[in-house]
Length: 387
Ligand SMILES: [Zn+2]
Image (cartoon, rainbow, N blue to C red; front, side, top):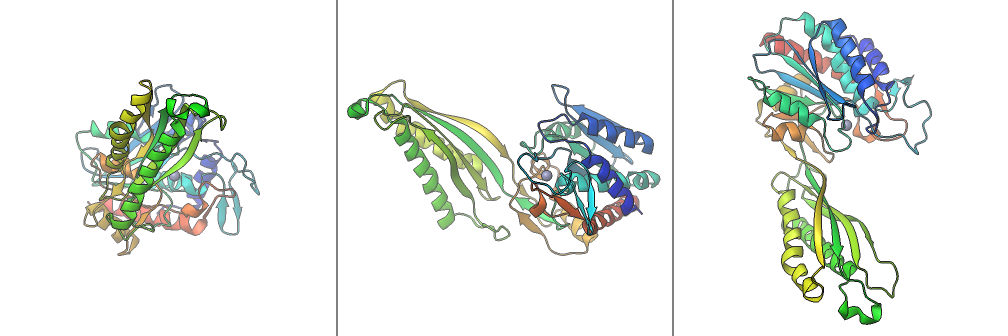
């Protein structure tokens, strides 16, 4: 049995490291390595190319058997401009809640995992438990890709992965995929009195933006449905536009950004390609007829694969059994589970605390959530001991 107090003490240590994604996470990684050393657990540090950040991958138990991954990220979002009642990088305990940046997203889960390590180590496991602690999740699920590459080189693949993003310990089997794109429309600048001699970059951008809107309306009207989502269909939108310098100048350049967030039945990449094809086949010929140098460039920004784990997958049944529930749900936010799933590792999201508190001032996790997660990991460990 893991002591909740130990999980809170580990959380206190983790919150003390300012691992905002723009910073190095190595001080935290050093601390985790020291902790694992004291527990007698071997691990691998998987550094980034610049050597300023690292993931940790640890296996406890028989590495030649398919086991379960407990996965969490070490980075947190900035506190810039937020007004906190207490120091965000010092865990503060008030009214059954633990306040601090990352308390719920998601150092709370990582702390529960680490607190369980002495107990996991003391057991005779029939299946291994792996710990995956990543960097740069908050800026596009980047670090975890090297952990997955490391896993793919193993002779035996894991049976499943639990990603501990805050879900109030609900069993989450899906989230939408996302693809976002930056567009630059290059036109030709002329005085506005000579408008037909120019190529108006803002106007062509507007046509593309309307195309994105048309596709989004089509999806809302007649697209595939997944009732487990609050918005049960694929969505698209344009978030920023920049163009034009003065009313009497035909604008020569316009940039904008758009995204699609797709349910499992749709493909955000295919929808993006539909926008690109419209630009290439319909708009560019008209632009180039006036000015050969005119054109449109599309640049992929961030994105992540969706999660759509079938309800009959073993890892889903296991998570439900361990939590004593029959329910599963889908969420609006993206997680590393999409990347594990895309790599062929069946994954669910299940973690303590609420996403409502993530990324905000006075982020907290309820102590009762820590207790629920500690119990969940204890039951998983017992399951792995039993075989
Ligand atoms: Zn997170």
